[in-house]
Length: 550
Image (cartoon, rainbow, N blue to C red; front, side):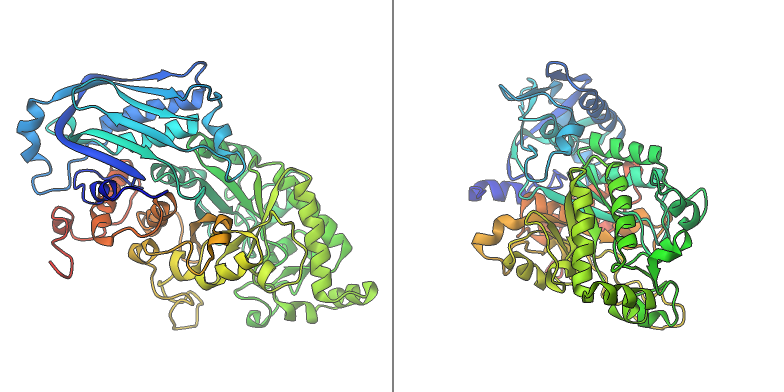
């Protein structure tokens, strides 16, 4: 969608708004407008679903409790005279377009990727007449409410804006706008995940990629396979029960977020040996550097029919726990030496007359068939397409992580893809090596700043005919050195940078984005998410004064 130049200028140089992500089309005026003490939101939707009503309640709460002063010297004192004589806004009206079906936000958010309706229009007149949000779905209304919340500031007890009238027409550039959290290397309580989902919703993210298990722990209690968690979690208190999953999934859905679960296979599965040693090759073998990318070593015996059937059953049971149409089966960092030195795997290969690659193909086909039978579209890491000769359905989604340069090769094979390259989007990079006796930098140094991720181009080296294959992207947190203690600070507001790239499209201006990102971070802190400071506050209150050319 190409915007007229005038609208782009209006959006980029507005110094009042902290809108993040940037709307695709924004027009503003210069009049003050305040919220009336009796301000209310009317839902003109027949049989409005409860999650829409709850979203409205959250918006009204934020409007009262954000108490965010404008990020200018004086924090809004200079606005007082204009606000004192301003008109008051009494009402915001929400409506669906004529003929639009009424579904819950949750149901809309779980539709297959690429079929969700998130567009909306928002109008705030300067004369005090009713503001409006109109959309084709309740999910679109939620996105509009999120934008509306970011329009307002507080000074002296009065909530107001100084740029009415406001007219916004908005829709996402890409449907997949995500964040991945690894809960295996370190455990995160449900409350931390919910707080993260809150922050995700404030920047219109649509996908929570939950990397729930890995070689270090298996914290998910799976019906029929409960011994994996009882023997593979760090502690009984560090397990996600089926009710926890339902709670997280429902919480996410009500905030417009789909939950894509990942059970990484056949690699990254050492912990399964705690309950089922018969299914794991080179479990905790030493030296681990020979058998794995990080400790502990251990991979599923993919050449074993019994292990393949076990894995297919496990993945099917996990699939039934999650309503999303997408499920990731992983497939990264397979270590061949592990299988070369595993007598059971070598015996199975000899008995079937298969090569290791052929066995991997059989394993993949059977495990993918199991989750497809549960209505899931498989997602895999890029190696399954670029490094292995396995049969994948044409609808398989490929997660690109090793390098941004690899996306073009995935697209050339005509697979849909999600960008998550380590050279732009890995939030854990730059903290130094975590291996105990190694003094070194992290493998993916340097630290990935918000500026770096903000400059990402989703279509770099991808032809126009392949552009439709790009679903969007995500920022990722592998948690070797992260836990509940630093979750907020390592993720926010950096992860918001990709949220804007994949909502608004690439090519944003760093200098004009920074004041808006400051605003978002301040608002997040007001709402209980401990986003880090991006600059000294002196700079935040003086946009542009801390640039190199200022």
